[in-house]
Image (cartoon, rainbow, N blue to C red):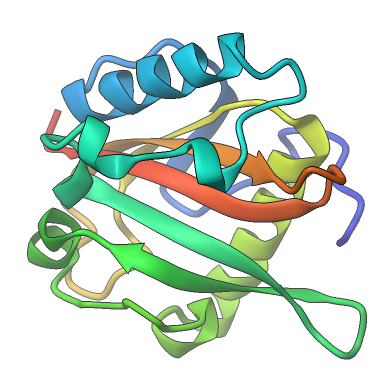
Length: 168
């Protein structure tokens, strides 16, 4: 992973990036509350095996789960394990099973890699909000999203759990 030391290094065109657990959207708020409840019982942070998306059924359609996949060149890639139906309806693409480079432009892939590096370096919840410029013809779509890092028992990045709210 790259070293990302500040918000200035972690950005996504058209969006603001904040470390926060204060969300206004119902899906982002519900996933944040769910994760915080899991974290209270797991001092080193919840693991993927602790997460049950069906425990928050109204949020599942607005959820993305990315797996962190090690590459041969010491880099990581991000592959969508789960891409909710509400995400597909809003962004106009089903990216289940796809790597980020398969559906984002190279510019956004670079920005996302820095953002995800920041997410795992900070070990904090990250709030994205703004316009969905990363998807063609969706730059007027307003959204808020929580980005949650999930680690292995050994403390290595394993997954990113996200929920989105649209047109807030």
